[in-house]
Image: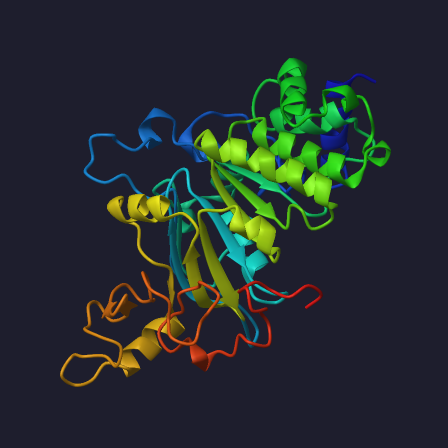
Length: 370
C-alpha cells in the first residue's frame, strides 16, 4: 500500500473505531475529524482577516499567559502564572519533576485548558476558540516535539513526516524528504521507527514539527533520551531554527539545553521561582517590544507584603508592586540578582517562601534523578 493510502487508512480505521484521530503533531485532534479548510474557524491561522495589522503601534506577543492556573483537585500544577513570549525568542522552562513545566507546555500547545486565566497565541484568546479552531492552531501555528517521539510504528520516517502534511494541506513527499534532509536523515527516509536509533527518531519528530512551517516549536525534554552526540545534533537544529526567526519554547531539566536559550524561567510546584537571561541584547529587545518579566500570584502577593506604608520596599523604591533592580516593576525581580541567589536567576520578591533548595542544584537547574 502506498504511503498516502496507508496514512488515510490509519485515519479511517481510527474513525471507524470511534476514536479521535491524530493531528499532524501526533496529538488527538479536538473533534476527531480531518479538516483542511483555510478559514479562521477551522485552521487557527486567521487567514487575511485574522492577521495582525502591521500598522498597529505594538504587535502582540506571540504567546501571552495572563494569570494562568491549572488545578487538579487540591494540586495547583500551575499557580497564577503570567508570561509573554515574542516572535523569535528562545525560551527554556526549567524545573524538577512535578514543577508544572509540562503542564504549562500542554496549555500553550492547546493540548490542555487552564482552570483560570487567559492564554493568547498571535493575539487570539484560546478560550474563545472552538475545538476545531484549537486543532487548527495546533496544526498551523504550533509544532510539537515530544520526548517519547509518538511516531506511527508501521510508517516509514518519511511517511511519519508526511502525516503532518496529511492533516494540514497537500501531501508532498518531496517536501517531507527535504525536511528529513534538513535534520540529516535523508538516507534513513525508508526506515521504520524500530530501525532507527533514539536520536534518529527524535530528529524525525523535529522534521515532522517543521514540515508545516509553524510559528512556534514546543519541545518537551527533546534531548532527555539522547546521548551527548545526538543531543548536540538536536540543539544545533534548534539554533538554526532560532536564527531563522522561529520561536522555540523548550521544557527541560538539562542545564546544557537551557543555557542555549536566550531566556530561562524556573518553576517550582507551579509557582515562578526565578527568571534568567542568557542574552543581554535579547533582553533589551524584549523590553523595547513591551515584554514584561514573568510573574506569578505568589510573587505579587509577597511583593505587596514587603511594601511599607510610605511606599518603600526593603530593597529599594517601588513601581507597580515588585522588585526591579532595586525598584519594583511587574511582579518579579528583574535586572539584578536577588540576595542569597548565586545561580544567576532573579527570584520573585521573597521567593524564600517557596523552598527551592531541595529541588535545584547550585547552578539553578533541576538535579538529575529528582
